Image (cartoon, rainbow, N blue to C red; front, top):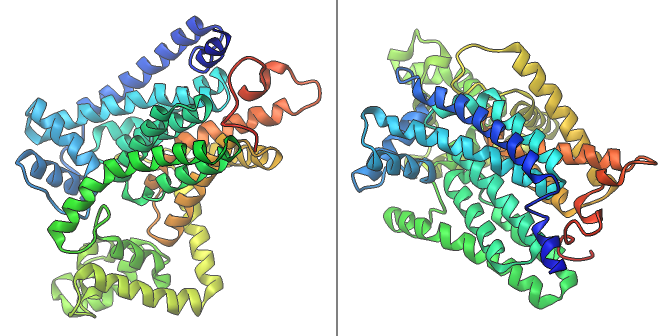
Length: 453
């Protein structure tokens, strides 16, 4: 019974009634803000990504797939919402976005609770509940709300599995991280990171338990992803892990004259576009559709499909710029990574808020420093998992296309990790209260993560 009480303490901390009341208020606040956005979506000015997701969703509603340029997770959710409540212009899908965005708030609390404790969980949940881009995304048909939820839930479930050593929790974590891949194809390596760290941190328990835990994560993730991979591969006649179209993102991201941005690529290649397509002769570069510019690039290899042609051109970029101008290429990567994290996303936000941008910049810098400092001081497994995930995604987008919106699925991890890192640093001060210690250091509060390392 004593062991059971210690394990239940993971989910039910001391003072849980007051914590539950505060959390309920935060969830209601976040839900109300998102409901207001879902009730008033900007239907007259959808982005190209929104149009793409909506087209795939409509294809699912009518029983056939759409373009494989977009991952299927978010369109599948939109299609389910439309099937359950048919509405013009997929209006039900916006309410699905609001529900998913609201569900993120208690999941972030759970994540903070597992990483450090209820204080970190409540502060992180409150920040996520009111963060303007998350609120606005309830009125946008984009994949970030669902991807943020599945990623945060998958990481939280994995930490719970590391605490309680239950196979079903490892499987739940794998399933949620597999779902993350189907929602955000750029995060395809995160299940691999989860499997590797699970095997590493559980090695002290013995080979059998370490292999069982890692396999549970891997098999569950594959069970979620492989049916779609098989469908897409059979449909196209070649291997399609989740989506096609990576060639375009890789070409743009490695095109040094365009500084790795879509706008820069349009600016540099506008003369060639105008020479081939006279209708763009007097059009500003930013107005020229990116698809037209990429078609021009792909036509350099008429014998190849578009995506393979763009990948070949991207390989040429890497040889020409990464190999020939390594310092300039490295600087471009740093700038892209900085833009991804240090600029707040404006997805769906019509007016630029300097206050939001400034607060976002300061918060990201402070949280990142606290997370890094705490990890250097003491490499706790939760912080290692968070840092590995953030590092992978940052490096990926430093090479591929980088946008502030791409950081949104990762921000809850940074918020929780940064707050836990700050608590770790405070707890390390001489004379610090025992209540500020990490969960595994509070005697009787919870079992340690997997075992000694």
